[in-house]
Amino acid sequence: MKKALLAIILLWCCMIQVQAQYVKPKTRILFLLDASGSMYASMDKDIRINIAKRLLSKIMDSLEQAKDVQVALRVYGHTTPPGQRNCKDTRLEVPFKYNNHKEIKEKIKGIIPKGTTLIAQSLQESASDFPAEIGVRNIIILITDGIEECDGDPCAVSEALQSKGVALKPFIIGIGGTEDFRKAFECVGRYYDANTEESFNNALNVIITQALNNTTVQVNLLDINGKPVETNVNMSFYDMHSNQLITNYVHTMNERGIPDTITLDPTYKYRVVVHTIPSVQKTDVEIIAGRHNIIAIDAPQGLLQLKITGLTNYQDLKCIVRKSNTMNTMHVQNFNTTEKYLVGKYDLEIFTLPRKIITDINVDQSTTTTVELPQPGKLVISAFSQQYVADLYMMNRDELVWLARIPPENKLHHYIMQPGKYKIIYRGRTATRSNQTFEREFTITSGGTTSFTLN
Image 1 (spheres, rainbow, N blue to C red):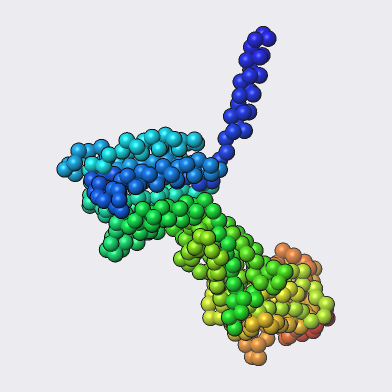
Image 2 (image 1 turned 60 degrees about the vertical axis):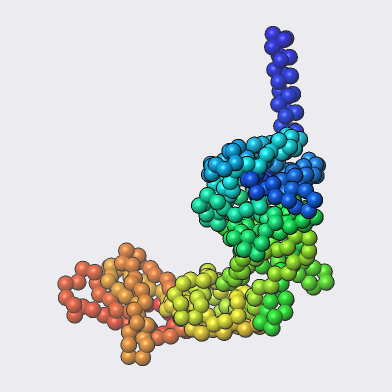
């Protein structure tokens, strides 16, 4: 019994130790290395494959010290004899896991360039290289000296990887590339020339910096004069390709009255949504690692105040706000409140009785536009003797405008109404002749109560 208990305690301690050692990775980097026959070509005082091996081994030494990062290695063109066009010659040589840097270095040493260049197929198969885990940035670094040779479409595969959220936009290091070479990869990912060992090393370091570090950003919300004075509104940052929400920041002015500095991951291309009313957005926003970036977005705003004169019997009077000449509800604002809107013209539909429509309300920069309603009155209708078929109308000159049908099952009715002239038309519910129809005209005054009994 004691031995069994001791075994359980030891197992439990081991489990705690394993859990304590595990840290969820923030970033996964897949190195996709070209080992086609052309990598034997010379570069500076060596050949391309040797330089690639040397620099990859060097970067593994650096990444070994990085926290919350896992790396993996996929290679293509290295298992098929020269002269044979094998468009399936791609293999994950070292999968993602912690502390595999030495394993990758050893694997790199034994790679011998042989076959063809199959970029699309390699990118496609890399989708299964990344473990399925939410909240991890998956990054591909493609190192190649040639363009697609297997009739695949690297651009389409890259777009699919990004739109499905499998990986971010790949980084490409083009060894010995020309201008046409660069253009072929513009749709695949972010391209870096590597025509010398020094430029190769610089490109690799820049990419790793972007992959591991956040970058400072300042968002300027511009008023109608182009000044960055708008603030106090949430900003959502989405990945342009997968539409995944990356982060939110409430725009803030610092103690010097300047838009506050925020940090963003430079590996994404962003869609920025500023939640003004209505919202505004800016697409295809790219930030540059290692520098302070400024994003300018037009967001000129003014204030709309809705108020009621004097005391009111309204419990919760609401107003639909629409852009002028549209029917889409943009916002529902309560009366006796003030709300910010983008500069422009708006139509209001107010839930009074009768319902009130006001069109082409101007909201101007940094000013308050006030819409004021008169104090309402109250209508009290009693119907104690019998049930009635009754409707309430507004007198609009000689025209009757229907407002409401009075529920027959209730004996007492209360209505909060705007000042004006009205009419109720009714008859007893059990009456058998149309000439038993009756009419009552009445006037509602601000703050007053009008009462009568149907008989």
